[in-house]
View 1 (cartoon, rainbow, N blue to C red):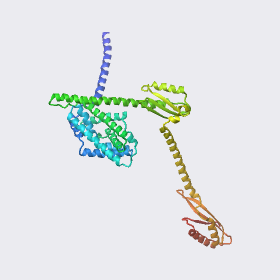
View 2 (cartoon, helix red, strand yellow; view 1 turned 30 degrees about the vertical axis):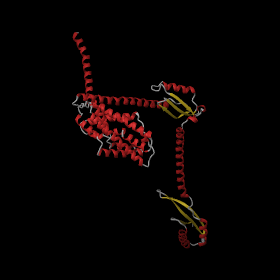
View 3 (spheres, rainbow, N blue to C red; view 1 turned 90 degrees about the vertical axis):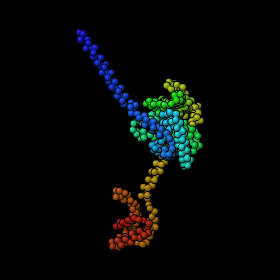
View 4 (spheres, rainbow, N blue to C red; view 1 turned 180 degrees about the horizontal axis):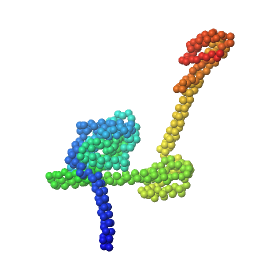
Length: 474
């Protein structure tokens, strides 16, 4: 009995050990998969970061040319051209240098990075300003408008793009040169070009918003560089004076804190605004439904927490609107939202005066586009029918005059007719003018043939026709 109990006790123990072994293997697998410490070349990374900070010579000219290309792409709203400019852009050097120097307490590198960042911004904005100043196309495009205010997507691109770049730069090998300007430049180059556009066209809101977007993205890229450098444990710069080292470390830490706190606050605010916009759209599309009524337009304001919905069609009862208001206040992050519903059939709502010009313009534009398409379709059909009609109608031959002259010249003609005959060889259709002649019975066959030849020659000279057929009906 004792042996039996011992065996039964060892079975769970063996299964537990096997489970722990599997978990340990899985853990080791993911550690090896995601670990980047062993493959980090710290010395080469430090040299590369310092080398890419400077903006002079080749780097300056490459920056100028890439800004020109990006400005052209934004000017004509061509995403492909903007992406092409990103591929050759050397924008990242000073920003990576700032994040890296703060992480390793290198004040000299930090100063160089800040100076070159200023040079980079000045050159970029000046180049874009000169281009848009001389460009004949001054209209704003969707590509330009999209770079006038930061969104949560811009911040995410800056964060993950910055992390991808610094991780690539720390890897042994040349992978960083391959991705140097790709994903990161999306957050930097277009905003700088938009600043130049705003200055050239005196649209200060555009210039300020784009500069704000560039600043936010630069901060998050530098912050990403700082975090990765700390994670990979890059050695701190050593100073002979220990007091100077402590002061430098404190300054670097203070800079990092000053950068991180506003950045985190901005990220949270942008995230809340994005969630607010997304949930209001989802609520309107899924909840605001009433038989016989249709949503013309809706707008939401994150600051005032007001959602305005414009309806046309059947009037929605007030109790239904109150029900919608209760439902939206039960949704997380929308508890303080005020729902305002304006209805076209309810004159008391004064929709005619409250409906914005943008809504009316949108409706009129939609009707215009649809009517324009209908008119164009009808014009095309009329043109096609006119072309077909040409094949059937008279070509302008003065048949009455021709008949009188023919009777005078050829007295043996008893009857004469004219028509346009349609013929085809099954690849195309031709219209051939055809004259049918009936001769008097007393005209002999030999004379008839001779008269037919003369008549054909006369008609070919008399009428401006390329093709002519004359037939004898007897």
